[in-house]
Length: 460
Image (cartoon, rainbow, N blue to C red; front, side, top):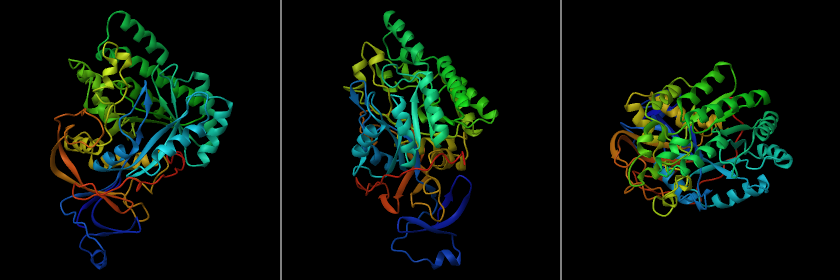
C-alpha cells in the first residue's frame, strides 16, 4: 500500500492486492478501486519501492569442489537469499562422470527438498557428454529442466571437448534447451598453472594471472562459433573480461541468439582484491577470475546496452578458515567460489544510486531478464496480475554496511567487508507468505517449492 511499483517496463504509484499466493490486482494509489479492497493485512510501503523478488539464475548450494563442499546448504543459502530480496534461485544439479543425468538431478532434488525458504529450480551440469546423456537431455527439457551447462575449463573434472560441446549444442537445438557455457580455455590455463607453480608463483594473485583475458575471449569466441554451427542458443556465464563482452556483442550484432551474464564481483571488485596480502586474496578466488578495474566500465556498458542481459551471483561460498586455506602454498588448491546471494539486489541498487544503470534496468537484469532467460516469466520476475506474489518492499534511503558480522550466508568473511550501501530490503513476500517482515526473518525451511521451467523465452 502506497509504494512506488517498479518493474522492468514501468514505474507507478500503485497498491498491489495479493490473494492465494498470487498477485490478483494493481490499482493506482488513492483511487476508488484501490480503496475498495479489503485485506487481512495491509503493508505500508509509503516512501518505499515495491519490486519483484529477485531471480538469481546462478547459485551453487552444497556444491562439491576440490575435496570440500560449498559452505551454504539449501537451507542456509535460501534463507540468506530471502534476507537480500531474492525469492527464486536456479541452482546447478551435477552429473558425475560415468553417471546419468537422472542420478545427478535426483541427488539435487533430494538435497533441496523440504529445505528451501524460497522457490528454486535447476539447471543441469553435463560433465560426461555421451550418447545416453545426450538422449536424456530431451527428457529433462520435457520435465522442466531446460538449460545445460558445459565447461571449457577444469580438465579432468567438468571439462568437455569441442566435439562433445558441439553434440550437446546440436541436441539442444532440437529440444529447445539453452546451452550455458563456462568459457575459459582450460587446457591452456592448466599449462600456465603448472608453469607458475614451477616458478614459485604460489600466491592467490597468480590465480588471476594464469586465467588470461585472452583465454576467456578465445573460449567465448569458440563457444559462439560452435553454437552457430549447431544452430543452438548460447548463454555465457560469469563474463568478466572486456574482450569476452566484445565477442558476445559481435555475435548479437550478427543476430545470433547469444546471451551474457555477469556477476557483482566483476562489477565491484578487481585484481586489487586478489593481491591482498597475508593470503587474504584467497577470499576472492573464483573462475572466471576478477579482472583489473578497467574492465568494469565495459561490463557496465554491456549491461546498459543489453550486450549482457543478466546479473547473477555464481554464489559458491567457501570459508576462509579451513577451506580457502587448503590452497596456502599452492593457489591451484584454493576452492573456487565466492559468497554473494544475499547482496546482489543491494549492490545493483547501489549501481542505480551511482548512475551506472536506471531503476528499471536494475529490475530487468536482476528479476525480469533472468526469469525470461530461464522460462519462469511472468510467474516470476514481475509485478502483474497472475504473477506469483514474490514481492520486496525496498527502502531506497536506508544506509547499511556490508559485513560478515551481519550477513546471513554461512561463510566467515564478506567479499564486500565495510562497503557502504544505500538501500535495504525491508519486507519480502514469497508466494504471498511474508518471509522477511520489517527486517526480521519469518520464513521457514520447506516453504520454498520446486518450480519447473519453460524453455528460454527470448527464443519464442
